[in-house]
Length: 71
Image (cartoon, rainbow, N blue to C red; front, top):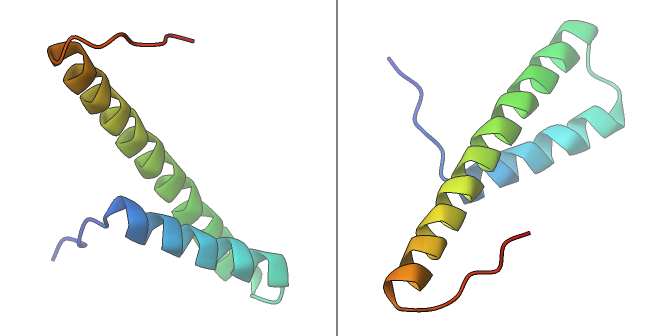
C-alpha cells in the first residue's frame, strides 16, 4: 500500500519532529540514518511544493495585470 502524500504543513511538522529527534542524539545509528534520509526527502518535497506555490502566485498576479518582482 502506498504511503499517504503529506500536505506541506504535515511535511514541515514531521521535519521538525525529525530535527528535534536528531538533536537529542540518543537514537541508534541505523534509526538516525533513516530519520536523516526521511528528512532529506521531506526537504525536497517541501521545496518542490514551495516552487509550485510560487509559480501559481506568479500566474495569478500575471493574469490580474500585476507586476512581478524577479530576484
